[in-house]
Amino acid sequence: MSEILEFILNFPELLALSVVSLFRIFIAYFISITLAIILSYIAVSHSKLEKILIGIIDIMQSIPVLSFVPAVMIFLTKFGKLGAELASLILITTGMIWNLIFSYYSSLKSIPKELREVGKIAHIGPLNKFLFIDLPYAIPGLVWNSMLSFGGGWYFLMYCETITVGNIDVKLIGIGSAILNASEDGNIIAAIEGILSILIIVTLTFLLLWIPMETWSKKFVVEEEIHGKAISPSMFKATYKILDKIYHLLLRLASKFRDRPMSFDIVSKTAYIFVICLLSALGIFTLWLMTKIPLNELLDVPTSFLLSLMRVIVGICISSAIAVPLGVYIGLRANILARLRLVILILSCLPAPALIPVIFSALSKFDLGIEINAILVIILSSIWYIFFNTAGGVASIPQEYFDLAKITRMNRKDKLTKIIIPGSAKNMIVGFITAWGGAWNGTFVAEYIEFKGEKHALRGIGSLISESAEKGNLEMLMFSTILLAFSIFIINLFGWRKVLNFILQRHLT
Image: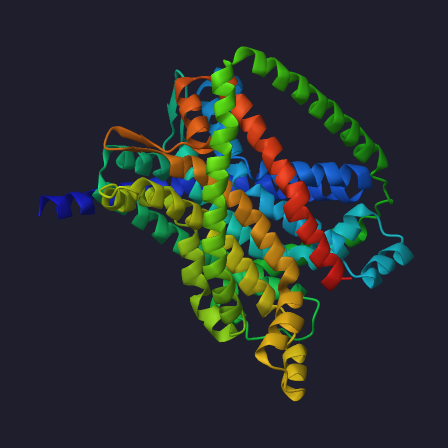
């Protein structure tokens, strides 16, 4: 009885903490979307810089958030509480920005030639081009990926509000730090309370903002008819009208402002030189780090990476086996997607680390329980990206293609290989790339767990980074992070990027 009373009394406070965390997430979101748009334009304006910049983004979205902590905290803790808040915002941003960049960048690259020609003929400047051509074409994908980024912001909130590096130990006010404290203490009831408060705030946010925005974004879809029925705007009339008025106000202001055509050559060339200098400095810094670390510890880093790579591959394979068939099935049934979308989106915002007290307490009793727990966390860190992008890609295929398949009596195999996979290829590959990054982000949570005052570590690059951060071993932390980044770059260069380019060239040109 006393536990129930304590549950009821603590819940309003946890809801208030969730609102504080929500405020941080929205600030980080606006930072993320602004940077995503700027970086996308820089990338598409210079072919040489594009390859380097997108490669770096591929790597950065795969590096665990914890790896950014030392450099951020060492500098920003000098500014006290404000510095800690800025550090938290930067870390939340690193969990949100990547799929927004990929979304806007891929939209810019796939704008129909006819729309580009209209801009050239009209001699419109960058502001009008952005508001009349680029942004409208990108809005559907940008809104959809914004909802995914929103989930990404909640996912690592626990570790963005509780920052520990050596002697630095900062805990900000928020639901993330409250849940992490409960997790470390093994307080399952408090952790469940925190999870419920997050679910309530996330549900209200989706109902009042994201679902109306997603409905509003359908106005900008290029095809005249979309497979399935959209949610009626009347369900969210107030928010829908506000969004429409804001956008039309921007259009009117832009139409009155005669901006001159502007070249990004100077910006892109400067950025290109800066990136080359940065990479050169990073190489020299890595060699210096190697002289500071004992040989046996240096040799442990590649082995740890390979063990984590095996877990990531297993997690991605299991996620794919579940998410792709389910995404295709639901994507082909728009009515089911419309009904389940809100529930699935809300579940995707649930921080997997918050489930550790519940899952780990049961699995830790088994011999391979810690390993199974690690794979589960990696799956939860990646599965939503694959599912949402697959379902969204399949749902966006025009109905005319399926009507044609019906008329020609196309069998299921041909329908899958000639319509569904080509039609959703772009979305699916983006889903796999972001899932790949999500899986790597999940490794440091999966491989290093503190439960009931005890630390449980699996050998891997995630636990190596976590332990180095906790001990304040900055040399090992930075070297591990750089080696992780370099290894992921090689895998992306010879794996993901080639697959992406092959599918885009085969199905989208």
